[in-house]
Image 1 (cartoon, helix red, strand yellow):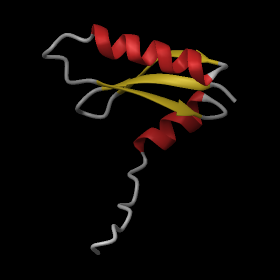
Image 2 (image 1 turned 180 degrees about the horizontal axis):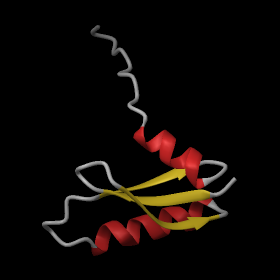
Image 3 (image 1 turned 135 degrees about the horizontal axis):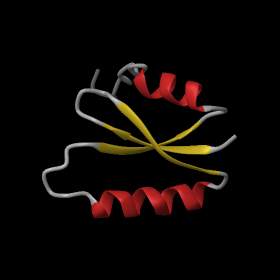
Image 4 (image 1 turned 45 degrees about the vertical axis):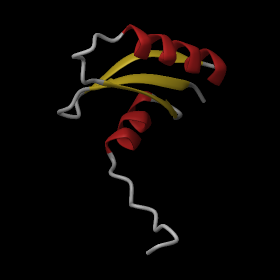
Length: 72
């Protein structure tokens, strides 16, 4: 399964940037993208591991449940 890099806007619009077979390559590319962002750019760069773009987008748009902390 490939690693996908997505740019996510503040309005939750997803833009596929690139895909990689190896995590290390995806991590380096994501770091480079984050470093090249303009100071006012509010987009988020995320890496997701999925079988295809449809699954990747579904996972990115699905809200995750809050994990209880020790204080809860």
